[in-house]
Image 1 (cartoon, rainbow, N blue to C red):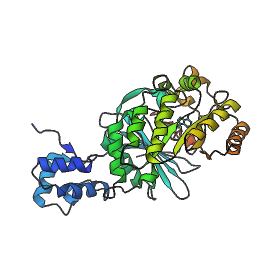
Image 2 (cartoon, rainbow, N blue to C red; image 1 turned 180 degrees about the vertical axis):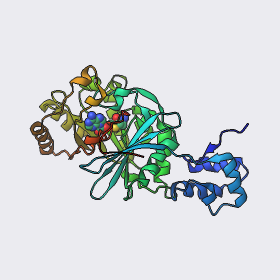
Image 3 (cartoon, helix red, strand yellow; image 1 turned 135 degrees about the vertical axis):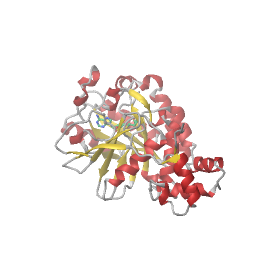
Image 4 (spheres, rainbow, N blue to C red; image 1 turned 90 degrees about the vertical axis):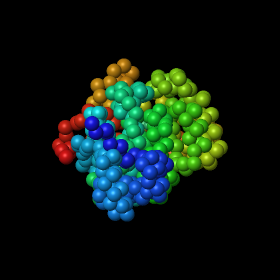
Length: 359
Ligand code: SAH
């Protein structure tokens, strides 16, 4: 009976070294295959021309280079934002989004199938949680989406489906592969990991050699309100998270990005401005104010069904007041909202739209 082949895509350099040692090959083969997999993105051992014929034959027998199956691409007519739906080997669907901007092309990737956090404003939260993604499934989102773009991907944000810090080991491994100069060579400065707040992981992340950015999904500076819209806050309070973020800054000197969706009547009052001003004095940071994208297509229940965006005028006034208080504020536009593909609001309900392309 033939055993299942080992998929080498998704392996870190260290894991490839262990693999080649285990089959009595020299360690330096690892760096060669690492480059073929992630720099040249070759998916056949036969094309790895600096490996001996015998080794290539052996790899064909015992190893494989898998790919996610792309089942749909939706393209926003307005902004050329592209949403990709992939099918995993177990049938799970995951999504990635490519978001173009003048000087950058950002890939938003998923780290879990669904998400256990159940944030009330988030489409992914409404679909429940299935499992963590493997490193291969995280990395291959980059490889497959880049085949469907005529521009190079310059930035990566971990803001798709799932909570990266609940899939921590695989997230760290994927970061080491994305940022390695033998692999994707994306500068760590251009990679942002976004978390809803797992304090011990924020602290561990601060101590990692990886020099990437950290975004924190804040959405309210009030413990009670935050718990209402983000149930994870009952387990890991804002207080604990803020202490962890202070530690992150102390260790890394990297400013935190706070994400803040403006929700009508929930987190858009003058008191909320005061909360943000106070927080920004404590933690060197910038804040992304985000218009709420409707999640009506997920048929939300309870409070999730009640959420509404702050009106345009009040939104602008809120941003203005923050700026008057000397906060660094960015307004995130809602690219891809017409394909339900804005970051962090992915759901695997495949919308049959005119703009969809079947592949
Ligand atoms: N679990 C991680 C990664 C998911 S990204 C985290 O919570 O940070 C989460 C981000 O997606 C939010 O901070 C917000 O920026 C965005 N997001 C989620 N739902 C949204 C919605 N309905 N409208 C606009 N942005 C949304």
